[in-house]
Amino acid sequence: MSENNLPRHIAIIMDGNGRWAKSHGLTRIRGHIRGVESVREITTACAEKHLEQLTLYAFSKDNWSRPKYEVAILMRLLRRYLVRERPTIVDNNIRFTVIGQIEGLPKNIQKEISVNIEESKSNTGMILCLALNYGGRAEIVDAARRIAADVAEGRVSVGDIDEDVFKHHLYTADMSDPDLLIRTGGDMRVSNFLLWEISYSELWVTPVCWPDFRKENLEEAIKDYGKRERRYGGLIE
Ligand code: FPP
Image (tube, rainbow, N blue to C red; front, side):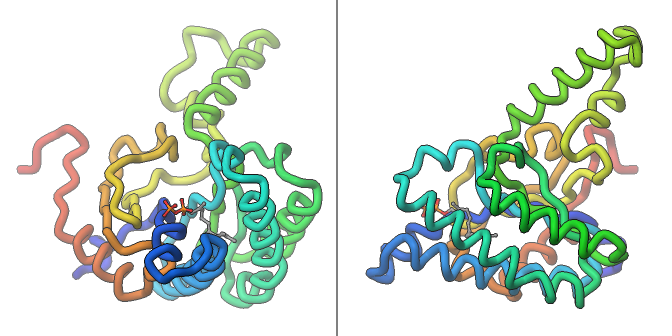
């Protein structure tokens, strides 16, 4: 496969932690714990491949509706991940960032996020973006609000609002759109993830649950992507 066929930006819906745990006779929490190991392995593999960006759907706005206990454990795992992975992120020249309504997360998580962003801000390698308290529709509504405020304050005129202006008011304003969207766990849906940004992304769904998703599975997805013909609604000569 030529370098040109490598995706620059991969986004992943990490699903199936609960089902993986159930199939092994374990609690859902065990599935999330092993899911963090997959996050670690896939992040390192993507950085080694010199991907421009990896975006992971780590906690959606809808995840708050899970039992209190599970939400509390997910927050604890997230905090521990942010602290423990800090040296690996920095040593691998990875720039850490987040998208989502970060102000809605617990204060201790917000603090660790800020430290990771600050300590990795001069890194020049892959961008690792965690989607946290994220919803695709909320992102679009937030963008509309910001544009409305710009119009109200005279910074933008209504006639100037186009796709480019809109894009620059999204959480992902300074990021490229994902080339490849991977979903683990086998469900064929996008679950309110990056609704604007995945308009032209190639989709790859695997029945493999996230806790079992390893480098070989990533390779398979990238290989499949390499065979795709991206037409963006046009024709290939
Ligand atoms: C879906 O599995 C997974 C999530 C709720 C988000 C992913 C979370 C992790 C990988 C662990 C924490 C992440 C970080 C970055 C520390 P599910 O519970 O919906 O699985 P199911 O569909 O089988 O029930």
